[in-house]
Structures are given as C-alpha cells and as structure tokens.
Amino acid sequence: MSSTEDYQPLHGADHAPGDEPVGRHEVAEGVVGYLIGLGLAVLLTAVSFFIAGTSLVWHPSIPIALVVLAIAQIGVHLVFFLHITTGPDNVNNVLALAFGVLIVFLLIVGSLWIMYNLNQNMGPMPMPMG
Amino acid sequence: MTAFQAGADYGDGRGEEARGPAAIVLGHADPASKRIIVGYGFWIFLLSDIIMFSAFFATYAVLSGETAGGPSGKDLFDLHNVAIETACLLLSSFTCGLAAIGARAHNGLMYYGGMAATCVLGLGFLTIEIHEFVGMIAQGAGPTRSAFLSAFFTLVGCHGVHVTLGTLWLLTMIAQVFAKGYRADILRRVLCFALFWHTLDIIWVAIFTVVYLFGAGA
Image (cartoon, rainbow over all chains, first blue to last red; front, side, top):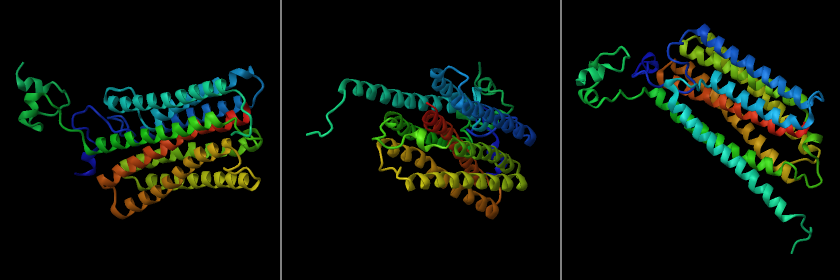
C-alpha cells in the first residue's frame, strides 16, 4: 500500500486520532491549527499560574478555578493537538474517550469519597498500635 | 430501493465497483484503512495509560496531606521551575505537531526540524525534573520520607519515565524515516508517536495543576 493510499478514508466515515480532519491536508492550515492550540494552551496555563499565586481572587475559589482551567486546557489539547472532535468521522474516537473519562472519574472520585469517609469514621488513632 | 441504489447512497464519490457484490447487498462499507485502525488501537492504549495515571492521581490526592511531620509541597515546590518545564512541554507539543505535518507532506525540513526541536525540549524538561528530584532527595525529602513524598515521586516519576521513553521513541522515528523514507508503515508509527507525545502533555497539565499549583498555593 502506498503512503498516499493510506491517508484516503476508504468509506469517508472515520479518521485516525491525531490525523487532521479529511480535506484539511494543506500544510499552512495544519500549522495554523497547531498555532491556535498552542496560543490557547499558553493562555490557559498562564492564567492558572497567575491565579495560584494571586491574592486578587477569593481564596476558597482558587482550587475550583484551577480545576476548571485544567479541564479547559485538556479540551484544547484534545481538539487542536490530538484532533479528537465532535465530527461525524470521529464517533469511534469520542466514544473510546468517553469510556476512558468515565473510568477515570469513577476511580478518582470513588477513591476520594471512600478515603474521606474512612478518615472521618476512624478518628485519631493512638500511635503505638497493637 | 434496489441493491445498487443502496450501494450508491454512501455518497463518497466511489462507484459500486469499489465494493464487492456482498457489500452492496448487505450495505456494508469497505473496511477502514490501516492508518485508521492503527491510530484507533493506539488511542485505546493511550486511554488505558491515562486510566493508570488516574490511579496514581487518586493515590496522590488521598495522601497529599500525609507528610509525617516532614516537608510539604509548599516547602519543596519551586513554581518557577515548573513554569519552565510546562513551557518546554507545551512548545514540544507544537513542534511535534509540525513534525507530524512535515511527515505527512514528506517535507524533510519540517519533519527533522520539528522532531529535533521536540527532542531538545523534551530533554530540557527531563533535565529540570531530574535536577528537582536530586535536590529534593539531597535535602532528605526522598520518596521514603513520607506517604506524601512516596505518592509524589510515583506520580511525577511515572510521567518522567514516559517522557524518557518517548524521547527514545522520537530518536528511533528520526532514524527510521532517515533510513527507510516516508513509507506508509513508518508514517503510521510517526502518527502513534505524535499521539503519545501529545497525551504526555495532557497528563502534565493535570500534574502541574493538581500537584504543583495545589501544593504550592493552597
């Protein structure tokens, strides 16, 4: 199989994660896409670092703001760098991602939930156990 | 509707002769190209890698306060270094994207230039990270000091190992394209490498937020 054949979607219904959407094979367009992604990622990172060290915002809101910014930045990376989009040619990739996100969510939230309750129910323990 | 009309309904500009008679009758499309299948399979692997990292993140989140009287993140983390590390990885994701475009367009300057820049930025990241780890261990804040530090070194160290392996893969891909040219199978490996590298960047976004910014700020 020649290298150009490998890029042609045989039935126009899928594209590989990381590949540009079908029809966007121009070098300049591709570079612009990565440039937009880099710009957004740098902006979100800069805001994250600024918020973490500032006293301008209400203190308890900082962790929530950082989580929101991180999720937004992960979204930017997925769309502009990994080219996981909501297009009809991307359903398989998005479904796999959705399942991965579900497992990650269950693992992290479940662990935190259980361990928080354990800590509360146990209370302080006498140090020399036994 | 006849079988032939059903076959023509895909609207992809290819005649029925491109499909076998069975495909026309059953309404099946052709199988996806190897590039799509390989990319999809590697995407599944990357998601499983992310799930593994999420276990380390959960462990870290549970143990981040258990310093056993030792130093906390506030005492140890230098956000200045973290900002430089982040800049290295973000820029390397961009140069990796340029290399992927270059590989696709068979443009040697873009491919080799992009890969070389990615390699330099990755090595820069690793240098700063190893320097940080060595400094922490030297001041008695190694992985054995507390549960917090065990979780920290496991999580951040695992990402560092991924970057190290990614850099080796990067050098391999430079050599393979140099030796074998822009062959379809080599280009599929370049695609997988680019996916891997971008995914490391996503994990780093979570690390600098959860570990460093939470640790040093709040």
